[in-house]
Image 1: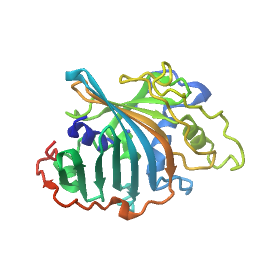
Image 2: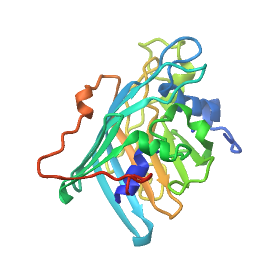
Image 3: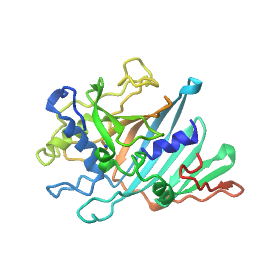
Image 4: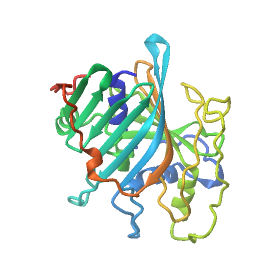
Amino acid sequence: MSIRSLISFLFLVVTLSGVAAPAFAISLGDVIRTLETPFQAGDDDGSDYRIDNYSANFFQESKIASLDRRQRATGRVEVAFDYKEEQYGRATVPTVKFRWEYEQPTTQEIVSDGETMWVYLPENNQVIQSNIEMVNKADKHDPMTFLTGLGNLSRDFTISWAMPNQDIDGNYVLELKPIRISSLINKLIIVVDRYAVEAYRNRGTAKIDEAPPLDPPVPPSDPFAEGSSFPLPGGDLPFPDLEGGPNDIWFPILSTAVYDPNGNSTIIEFSDVRVNFGISDLTFDFIVPAGVNVVRPTGKEMGF
């Protein structure tokens, strides 16, 4: 996967219905609110369902259209959000800190402390260091603010049901298209955990010791078995069972698929998600290894 494609995902990394509502009388609005609410300061009744941090394993598959080639990678991600106070009655975009560590097929790290981002490529003996604020100001209307704007996705994207609107496990599938034309993204597909939706609709009414209203999905043993998931281009991927419950804070995203105007795509699936267990700020500090070449791009696309 190219560095440009990788960075595009990270900064991605949200309404039209037009399709019949899925089972259990779930509306498109229910799914959108389930997706956005955990990344906002709080909700109307004063309860706080906010996600402050999460960590997860990830599987990634990228398709390079011009070469008709697919690349697969695995690793671990840690993300923390710093929510600021509302200004003039409007929620502000949180500062995001993250660490993406790729383990296979090659090792690399992408780290940000909210102000600076480092992309460490051991194979190239190189670190690419960029200023986050400079990049955001360069193209503040670009929808590649997905990672920092999860609480306001419907502001930047037109959201509708995908076709089909549910995967084989009953999770909800959304299609998002940027409101403003972007050279980096044509559309985004997000699979939203059905239990997160159920928990959102039932919040405050269910008891903690009650079982979830739906049977948990069981991940297939073969992640590439036919029919193992929603059939996205790039291969059939499993949707793992994520921890949660009726009154728990659920991580709503099972997978994302980003498609650019050139036909390239990047699918990322999360597993073993842990929410609000606390992540040290030291996680997002990056120390440049001795002898490594540091590149500091100045262009609006960080030189990728």
